[in-house]
Amino acid sequence: MKHISELSTELATLYDGLKNGTIEVKVAAEMNNTAGKIIHAQRVQLEYAALRKEEPDIAFMKTKAKKATA
Amino acid sequence: MEEAKAIKAAKAKAYREANKERIATKKAADAKTEHGRALDKARGERYRAKHPEHVRKLQQKARDKRAHIEKANAKQKRVELMNSYVAQLLRLPTALVPPEIMEVERTRVKIKREIQELDKCRTEKKCSTCKNYKPIISFSRSRGTKDGHSYECLMCRREKKRRDSQEKGLEYKPRNFNEFGRNVRHTPEELKAAKRAYYYTNIETIRAKDRARSKQRKQNETHQ
Image 1 (cartoon, each protein chain N blue to C red):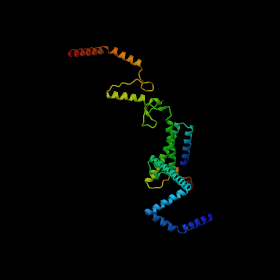
Image 2: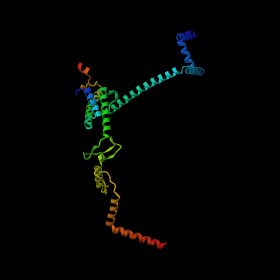
Image 3: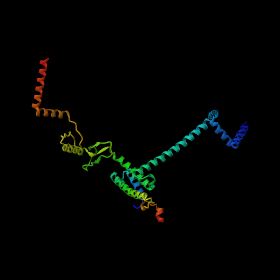
Image 4: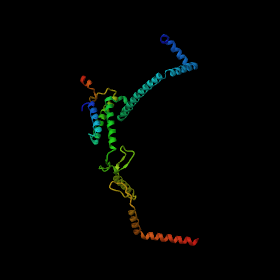
């Protein structure tokens, strides 16, 4: 998983699986928790950039078009 | 006759078109005076009486338009509320959270809620103290927790109570409980047997008390 869009699709499939009953509640809870950890890691970077009054430069969150130009 | 009516209507329309501004200013001036407002009201009533179908259609149209706007506003408000909630979860100002993170967090919240819903129907729970999975009946009801059951099982809670009272030097009397830690009520036979057992073990003290009581009664009677 190298981009936030992948994480988003992964979570969407997780939600569908949970609704269908194909994924166990325990597994879903753990995966959801892990996704939260990833997001909070990004949050720290965002906060850091905001404190330094800089534009955040996070590869995980860069759009694909931006990636191509860079 | 019809033709004359049509010509009159066309003339009136042309006059309205030509004097649009003048009519508008007159209308605005009329709206400020009592007489003008009354005239306007009377005109409106006359129109409503003459064309009820058209008025009803117009009212329905306005109602539909208002409902559509209200629906859109409610949706926008919901989205804003959710976004602010997500930002609150991330402990960041709403403007600072990028939309991608917003989306992921929204999905996470949805999954969390689904898990909470599914958790309500489960039959087992892990005790936070002994770390064992136990049937849900072994946990007392608690309003403060997410699933409505306490984190600690009844047995662990009882053990904690016993330990605490021992530390304080107090006497701890556990109630009669079953394998799940639930209190069990005594049957009438059990109560009878317990009473009998108590009587035979404390027979001397009970008889002494009885004797003292009868003596007191007799003394009271002689005084009277």
